[in-house]
Amino acid sequence: MFADRILLHIVPRLYWIVLRALTLTIRWQTLRSEYPQFFWDQGKGVIAAFWHQRLLMMPFHPHVGRVGMLVSQHRDGEFIARAVKLFGIDSVRGSTTHGGLSALRGMVRFYQEGGNLAITPDGPLGPRHVVQAGVLEIARLTGAPVIPVSYGASRKKVFASWDHFILPLPFCRVVYIWGEPVLVPRNATRGELEEKRRLLEERLKATCAEADRFFQKGAGASGP
Image 1 (cartoon, one colour):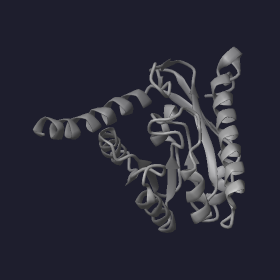
Image 2 (cartoon, rainbow, N blue to C red):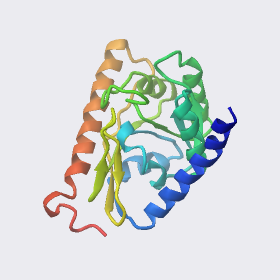
Image 3 (spheres, rainbow, N blue to C red):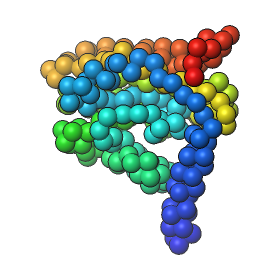
Image 4 (cartoon, rainbow, N blue to C red):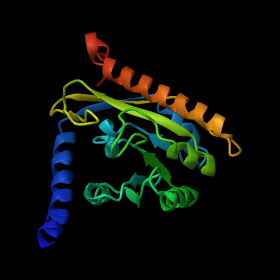
């Protein structure tokens, strides 16, 4: 429909403008960036894994090289794909859990061409904070490390959506925190993949909990 085409043209640009304006008011810092930097220094890409609720501010985190994000094929995914493109992030369309063979191939190809990958392993529809198997399969096929990453904000709005989406408020402080990488052997068995899935889930939850605690009781007082 014509109205849909207009919305697809306007909404992503409004998203970009509003987020750009928001980030001008925010101060941020990063903890444990040595985890991804170790691989970047070797000329290797990484798979950054973060919960769907922390998606909003991820395009602003510094990185080395190109980034490809897995974006679902449903209607909302088209808005996301166009919006992240304005931030210089490429999209691979599809789902790793619903007929996602093309998505897997696309992500593997993007990584092999020298890119980093960004995945919300509980998206796009949940269940919240449960890692789906697709990210481990991509890691197995590429040999790329899966590194959990999260952010916390000193002031934020938490929406009553399925993912409890987080919106940092203007003039707040934001901290990005990287977790310990998860490595998946290419010859991993189903049992080993499940162990890695649970490990990634645990490390993502721990990284988010640390980010949420960071500004409590003056914990972030030494930040910028």
